[in-house]
Length: 336
Ligand SMILES: Cc1cc(C(=O)NCC(F)(F)F)no1
Ligand SMILES: [Ca+2]
Ligand SMILES: [Zn+2]
Image (tube, rainbow, N blue to C red; front, side, top):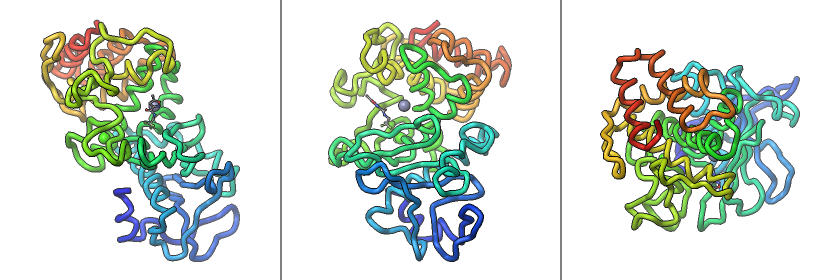
């Protein structure tokens, strides 16, 4: 929601849009032909998708807020990967765009809002982004920037390592999405304590200060410690059951915390291992290169440690502070 003002103040989406072969006059669509990013909507509670239009390009209707935020989010995710990592879109080639092309728009990386009814989730389905409105209690509409980046990073992972979505490789898949969710939010709004919270802008709208996950403190000790947000932050605490695809949203706390310690430094509350922070920019470069060049579908936590060490060595050298801190970050969380 916090992006609506941007749309009201300026013509964030302006001008005519090429629709198929003809150009429509003075009708405004949230379709950015430069970034190849477009946002569509489900008709309330149906499975019919349509292109939402506006006549004056001020998107302040009650059903337009989620469109603005989803489109803003996708645009910022595109800009982050292009500007920071030199990656063009989700698939690395300015796409995938087939979905929109097949549904009446130009070829665009598509986001769809208002999925289902009171749907407390968001997801990348292999070709496009989809957001629920939330039930208004557990979630407000799930169009917050870190969630958009989290989900669209599942797309990036799919075209790169394609980490199998279960057990340790699945927890890495989830963690890499949380990491780039945090990094995109930091890229747009600057670093703050919210950077390391996931979903804080849409989780429990009736409660301030909480979040879906906490990279700086997966156990969420601030909330009385071992609570509903009780995710592990050390390998010795990993979940080994079968729910949640083998704990993919639970064990993600372990690599999430490794990334946090690498970026910000600190001493692990359980292992007592101290990590000298290298900053989120260099940590993000290591994490991206590991995903793109060294990780595969079956990579586990030990493999992720090795992949990030290989990336740190390639980027900064095997005796660099970045390499040494990558070693200690994984050691702090009990991996390697
Ligand atoms: C349990 C559980 C957590 C998630 C989750 O993280 N979803 C992505 C988000 F965008 F909705 F946050 N899904 O099931
Ligand atoms: Ca956040
Ligand atoms: Zn996810």
